[in-house]
Length: 441
Image (cartoon, rainbow, N blue to C red; front, side, top):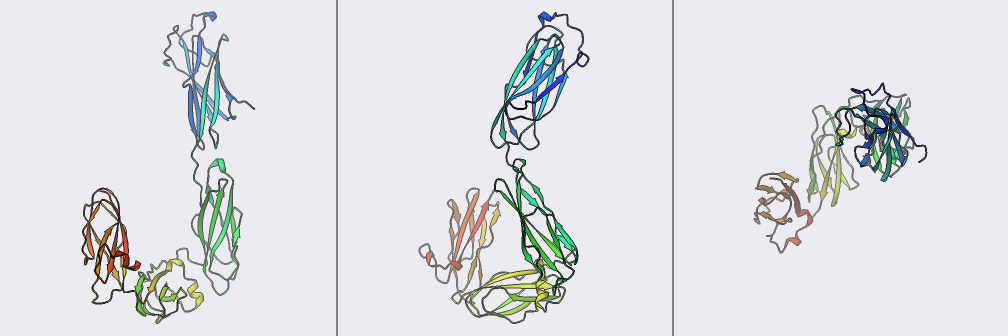
């Protein structure tokens, strides 16, 4: 083994004095040194220590005890501590007044990627030069990989003319400590060329004295780190420029998705009382006309069948210009989807997944955009074996009777004509829905 490293503790006569001197002559000296276990299997984790305990028993005081690594990749020794112990029981009856010493050697565990074998030797001499040795084998297993993650911390604030330094904190496995960095600008509220990409560990952002027509807004950066194994971790951070340290969150809601066959629909949003100004805008490319854009509730004309998306912006300041609307932060915006289909009479929603512990569970279905006075028929189907369900062709509510703990799936069909198990395939996709129930009694 290259560069063999020894851990040696010299125990002088003054250092390990025992009760009374032995009367046994040097020719009759008996001593033994042994490790506590014959073989050890250890797992190497970051910062771990390997402990090897050897025990010396003899009828004369030890001169020194030596713990040596004899095979395997060289380990860094830390310390060996030996203590005299008159109560150490070796199970062997020798002469009276035996010297007993327990030594613990410590080595730094390696950062390994595969199983490694090591061997250590304990050697002991008494004060008359009598010798004993023992060996121990240690198999080291690679520890589990420490997860790779990166944290960029809280969002940053900056003013015109200032610099911002983005500094990541990366936690990684020390066996694979080489990582690469990739910064990417995800959004930029300004007409100014801030850094878009970088492969350095730290990112410096210089805010100019003048940003153009938009005086305040935000930058959003994403950092991706990749270790030697190809594992990736990401985090994002926002840099708010010329904004208050506590931007106002106005709790805006644009409303639930709408399914309709009508050409004119009503949009009704809500927001915190602090919000004074409102603005509805179309996000999708489908042709539509918003009757009143500057109110919480408005009407929208839909020209064609298709999916529309609308966004409601709220603010404590005016929203008359494009620049003013672009400066509204994401947390003061909300969107909703509108689906228009000429042959769509209703849309079925069986509700959200349920976690229950009772033996009877009520299931209900919501029908959106239903035509007045139209009679609808319902059919509930179990998609999971061993589940009983109460079915009625004209009931929007039914009862589930789970037999055992587990996850159950049920589908509800809604139609303008009577339903049974033979004609379910004729029901359109928007007229059926699935609900999941997790039952844990």
